[in-house]
Image 1 (cartoon, rainbow, N blue to C red):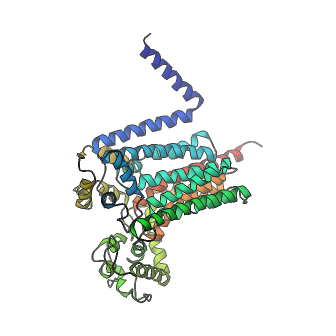
Image 2: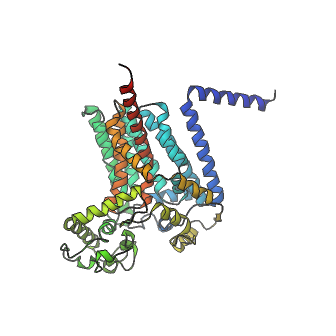
Image 3: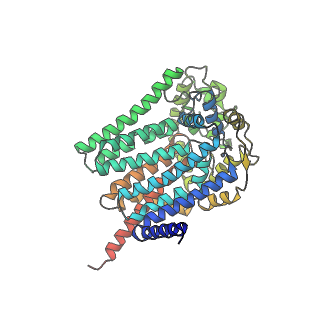
Length: 488
């Protein structure tokens, strides 16, 4: 028998042993292999990356001009690009690393659910949607900050669960660090900062000395890492805070429906009112009021991507936005509700922005959804990666797969109901982990709706914990049904 044949028999024997003894691990390996094959195919047919979305140009600009050049966003992703650029100045490396991070997230999701409890195979549910889901594939292939954000989020959840299970402070510190670094990557991650500390504090139902220490340490590390970012930004650029123009987002949330006849704008903010009646503002989403030159705010204080000459610009936006919310609370609730419906029906009309179909079209086709041209992105991409060649091949199978694996409509209703039920229907020790996943999912889904507006891009990071909490809930319900059906 040749050496190759002997090696093949040995490999088949080990695989067979694994499949019989640890079938959940064999299934995980199979998911990862299929996911790797899909990612390799993506890199072959569409390279070096998907760059139709305008934010990609902002991140390239950060890497070229200096990481503190963007006054609207936190710039962790620009740092990420800068580090990889130092290794090799090719965007394909970024895409490859992001795809590997996506597969790592699938493994971490599997381990997180296993550590929470339940059947060994339960973690395959979130691992499958991350390793094989079309939305995950597209977001990993795009030069956008989501992949790093999802990676840090998954590590935060895993470290939190390990801290509660092992009682080790090092895991609690790691959870806080991942949450803080998430803010470096995306400012919206600030909503996640209290989750791990509070959950660790209450993970044993009643606080103990150990859970108080873990929660406090996690919070200190999270806040300390955010503080380090702010201090670094100030020392390097002279700018204060996480961002300079962050209040544009809340203004974009309220401006489409704000009616200055229903509330009194604070002094100095009257020009932020749109004279067009709200009923006639068709197509005026949050993005219009933030980025359109016709926006009342741009006319008053300048564009959001520049630091305004008006030293009170951000306080004006903040005061106007809060006044609109307090003066028109029902309109604010209605705007959030219409965006909530879009979690189930992405094409439902609202003041939000891109639906799922529009988001994928924007990624591939640019601002007009068709041509594949985005001059702003192209300019900065060529500045950052001048030696890259661009290939656009057979993307249709991947687009079809993304649409097939997209969860909306009745499927999303079922997932959200299971997510909400998980903290109540999961019994025993796994209940605490189910609470962590459910709360994280709800924060990821609803914080953008309250502070900026719907965009399908914001839904994708929630898919992992959403499926994990839904899987735990389905298992908990099944366990209860079996117990009740069992003979006395």
